[in-house]
Amino acid sequence: MIHYIDTHCHLDDSCYDDDRETVIQRAIRQGVTRMLCVSQDLNSARKILSWIDSYPEIFMSVGWHPHLAKEYSSEMKEALIKLSKLPKVISIGEVGLDYHYDFSPREIQKIVLREMYEIALETNLPIIIHSRESDGDIISILNEYKDKVRGVIHCFSGNPQLLDAALNAGYYLSISGTITFKNSIMLRDVVQKIPLDKILAETDSPYLSPIPFRGKRNEPEHVIEVTDFLADLMKTPRNVFAEKIKANATDLWGIP
Ligand SMILES: [Zn+2]
Image (cartoon, rainbow, N blue to C red):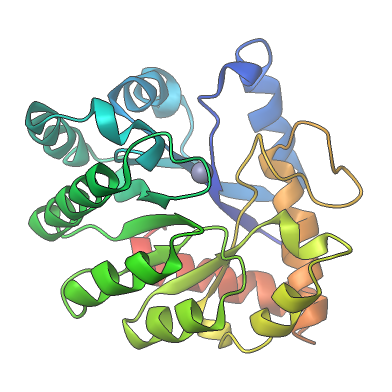
């Protein structure tokens, strides 16, 4: 049996409140034996902490999502640092910039992202970056912390400049179910340039269900479709590729 890891899911989302246990057990049964549950603010982190200890398969991150940047204040920093010291917390995220929705002013998003980098630096944890229509500013901030903070570009959307900057700064690129979409031709081209020791796979559940589940609620078990699709794209045997992804996750986060 091949073992898979979903490096980015939001199992705290209220759409799982009625069947979270079933969703988690289904994923584990199918071979998804590691999941990284990514929080977005203090509330979502605390929600994950309320059940995570029941699952040796699940780890988590703490951070402040760019959508919520305008609600951030410096007291949050101490609270996030405190949570980051808990044994299940292995990363800072998700953090970043989102100029597609612009739910928070861009200047504030940048201030909060630099705060999150300071937390990553202080706690020595890798960072999980969200970038939507903001790759230029992400590249500048990533370079400010080059050689000091490592991390992953989550749901990489295929910008070759971001790929170069990320690899140059030692980051990983995480690929979601969008790779399976019919119109993701450019993304498939660019992804083939990622070295095998820098690639990760994720679902971003409950969003971005891969083909043939597109449009439905996503679940960590679908990282199998994403990982197998990537293996075929990279012309690597599926079991070898899944092992590679697990080794990459261990290298970045120390996931056992
Ligand atoms: Zn996410």
